[in-house]
Length: 251
Ligand SMILES: O=C(O)C(=O)[C@H](O)CO
Ligand SMILES: [Mg+2]
Image (tube, rainbow, N blue to C red; front, side):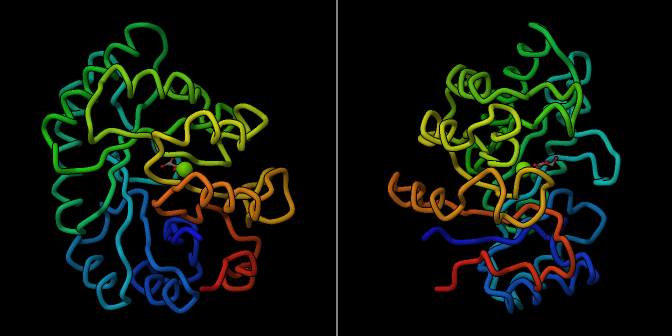
């Protein structure tokens, strides 16, 4: 069975951020992720993770605000300077948090120029931080209209084109299901380059139970394929987070 992390941007939101760590540990999670940790001093987040005995698994490149904000700039032609200064800021946080992965967000753009910009920026980032695990993640176009990366085959092509050992795929089964209609098939096709998995129920992005994805079957498929990374719960709980954790396998 994989190790499970709680996405603290979306889970345990009934508590202040620094209290979510202990709640996640008590619920049985072994790791945590925060999408945009930039509003809280990194040392406070790091202390909370250590005190709760949790690994800090993932954070995103800026911008800082989750609510309604854009999702990065890496594919936006003409915004290379902004991407680079944001990336350096993300690295400072990642180091302080000892984050295992950094998700580089593409932003809103389309066409060959966007692809070339994204590829160049990723190559630059992979070279600038060879010791950091970097990832890109396709997002479904219903939730993020206009987001550059909305295709798993394209993500795999770009990762191959950059060819950096520290760049891989972030596989969110919720987005995979909404983009293709068959998250399991996407896993079979691209699981080999996946460094991190996120899960949620489809439809609705709630608890991973009873929807279009067979999660017990998916977890078994992860084990069968030798996946050794984390699986993060990235969903909006229907009620209090703890009330909806029946799906979380207990070790
Ligand atoms: O939306 C998601 O699924 C993510 O994982 C991003 O990091 C945030 O947009
Ligand atoms: Mg995700």
